[in-house]
Amino acid sequence: MTLRLILGSDEAGVDYKDQILADLRQDPRVGEIIDIGVNRADEDFNKPYPYIGIAAGELIRDGRADRAILFCGTGLGVAISANKVEGIRAATAHDSFSVERSVLSNNCQILTMGQRVIGLELARRLAKEWIGYTFDPSSASAAKVQVLEDFEGAAAATGGA
Image (cartoon, rainbow, N blue to C red; front, side):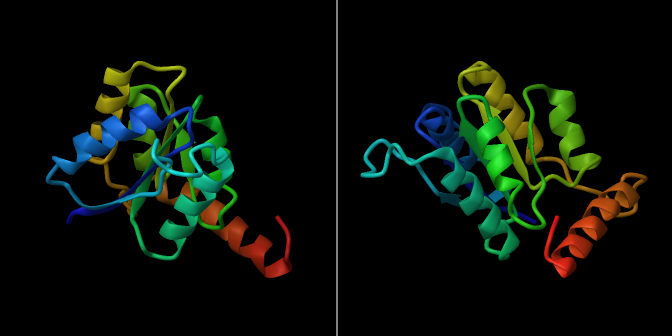
């Protein structure tokens, strides 16, 4: 199975987004890549990070993509934004173990990283590692992820979180 992947950033993460985008276009595990910006030539190059995180979350929620890798200055803003979308689990990770566990323990659909806090070569490595992991719904972690999904479903049914 090839991934349908979203890449996005605000202006503080655009250089890393562009490099990871180029890398993943060469990766046979990736089928389709949706670049949701920002791009240096865009009129809205200064689009705030919440728009990027929310857009990625909505595309995944709506079944138009499988996963996303997002960048901002720290990775935190796009993660917080994406996590506002129902059903989305986004995690900021800057090390291999956290990248692995984001998927294997948490069925994370969005990886976020910060261009201002890690080096480019590490970001490239982590993106490549992350797309190789697949959540196992029969793992011990599945019950923990189900708790999150159940809570979210109950909150949606009652109109609050």
